[in-house]
Length: 223
Image (cartoon, rainbow, N blue to C red; front, side, top):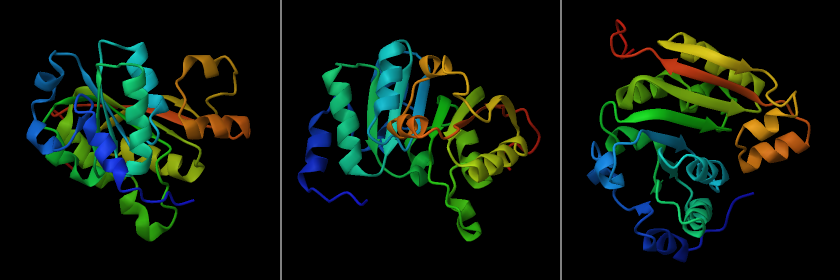
């Protein structure tokens, strides 16, 4: 279902100046300075309504989080959560992932979260998948050596595609799960997104992996 455009939403997002970044290009390479500390920075691409990223921020005060979302009608809900919980280690960008290199400098990010991204099932749209090697090439430029990508999906074909792309482009795979919540105790161990909670209730398997970036010392790492 398409969300109705509400002109006032963008104004609300940017009224929270401690949380929302109007021009992230001005902070490229300077994010730790803006957070006011040297803590590692983790980002979520496509943060949606923000349940996942705000929960992480509450649990991990010594990590800085940046949430990126292009749909203002859902991002405003994420910002409201951060305001409600008075979180001081999270910022929000209303923007497109394609502009990532305009937002962040080299080796500025320690972890990327990709949760339930659009699978773009048609073969001709493969380049739009956020685990396509063209996106991986972009991520490598902003990740510190040994940084990680954490990826979750309910789509088996997207998961297989992502396994192949990551393993073939200088990422070491670990903690691979083909049914994350087979053991119900795992529900307590992992932070869920809104989509994820729905899928769990429907009994759908959740596919998950972690991918460690092997670093700039890898030959032809920019490929």
